[in-house]
Length: 334
Image (tube, rainbow, N blue to C red):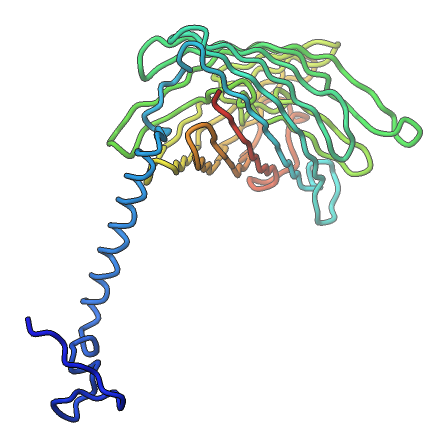
């Protein structure tokens, strides 16, 4: 190909009156030419990004082992924002009760097939207090499957200034059984269910206004990572949660993983008033790994209440979108 003719000061080609850029062929290309060029550059950039991530030692979430390797430690700082519509509390005006909790967790690879974890969750707004403590164990049966056991204590109830509100608490204990499953479908897509990590056990729920109402993770179990959750104590109702969580993990880049989560959940009240609450929860989660020792995660979830059965007194005055939560976390791999 001949080199482009030199461009004089008047901006026209030396060989005639055709403008320089049109003569050079830059102007006048069809639209599909520019679309193809842009697409190729985008693909090239993605490939280079993925290559750089692998060169930096970043292991994609989709290929990581379910349990931590022996001697490895994960430290997690986990925050939850909960928003429940006023209607759940019998109020007809628009708006919501909101609250936040902060959870801290440590998980350790005891062997390549056994992982132990400990977590604590604290309501921090609208009032601060003690909340929940739990222990977790995962046992790897297959590279794609691990059993999960959880147990712990929760202090649920009303928190606040005792001169302004009637502060009261109930001591509850819980046990849970679940699984962490990750089955690859392609190199970038996997079927997943359950969670890894102590503080990922469930949704630590805290809402309020001038006072805080801490429900813990077992009063409503629709966001739990376990199949079976049983809680009771303190003279209150025994609650049994049955969960069938499922998700689709997509890894478009070694640094980024996106998971769409859904499923079915039933919460059974078995003491005093007997009935069942039904949920079809939905969540969208994203995890970014900017460097090998760090994960940054976020999840938006809907409780997905769809109705109740059994005793007429067992129900929530709520719609599908009335129980909402946003969770964010930092996880450091040591």
